[in-house]
Length: 167
Image 1 (tube, rainbow, N blue to C red):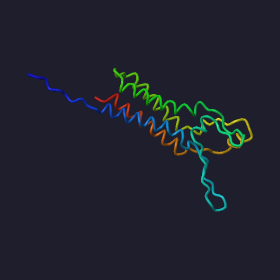
Image 2 (cartoon, rainbow, N blue to C red):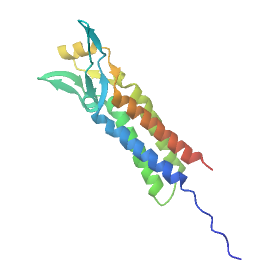
Image 3 (cartoon, helix red, strand yellow):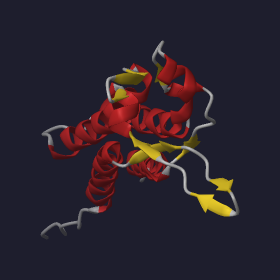
Image 4 (tube, one colour):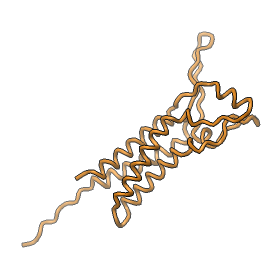
């Protein structure tokens, strides 16, 4: 009697692909506004707050030779962690041997990145200038880039968790 071939589930590869895409999307949010100033009502009109991209928050920002923000490793770290989680997931999925250790490191990277994205206004490093002092007085809020990146990173971590512990 011939043995029946069992159909292998592709759920693990699909979840890995979803996690990779979400990790890359979270990393790409470095080009979108990460923090913004609050909306202000001025003379009966609402003035929309201005946003700063993740690049400006992470690497510093100056305008007209007035330095306002300095380099912040903690603002850069969530983007690096999201990309590292995506790369580790890709290596683990498409490599020759599937390692649970890579999965756990990917989960940790994605979840840590997701949490750090939601803490982005606290990671801003203001320069020791008059402009930096003025920027420090503003109550910065999360912008769409940090919110989308945080949600994508947490969802990518959840996808890897489901992939790791599925039967």
